[in-house]
Amino acid sequence: MFGERRVSERSVLKKLSAIIIEMAETVLARPRNMVCDEAAHAALLLAHVGWNSEIQADCPPTREQYKTLLKEFAKSNREFVKDLRSDDFDALIAELRLYKRRRYPKDTRFISVCGTAPTGNVHVEWTE
Image 1 (cartoon, rainbow, N blue to C red):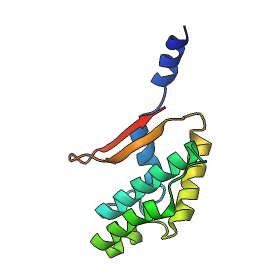
Image 2 (spheres, rainbow, N blue to C red):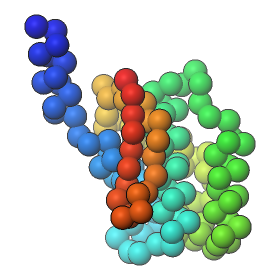
Image 3 (cartoon, rainbow, N blue to C red):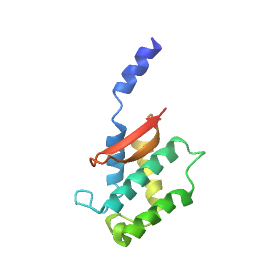
Image 4 (cartoon, helix red, strand yellow):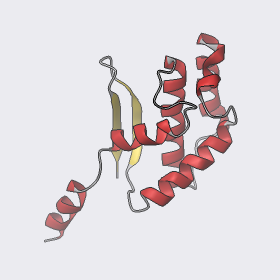
């Protein structure tokens, strides 16, 4: 009985990759326009960090962890932040946490992998 309920609840969950794309688009300056690869990856990273920080608030990633990756994006393209709404990454993560809290309060999936596949599709792996 409990297993049946769990399966039916899971079947109504939106694909997490679709949610992460939705969240990532909120930090882009012009979400309907083409953006550079670095900005797209940064937006996915920030959405990933925002989601997981909201799920496991007692163990958020350190600023150094995600800022190291953002610095790598900047090495590749210094202008990538122009495609984001702000260069205040902590503020963007705070907004993404609020977005998750308001729109998906009961979704407790924890993202273990988030990125783009060679085909360009967003790939997300998660655990409960």
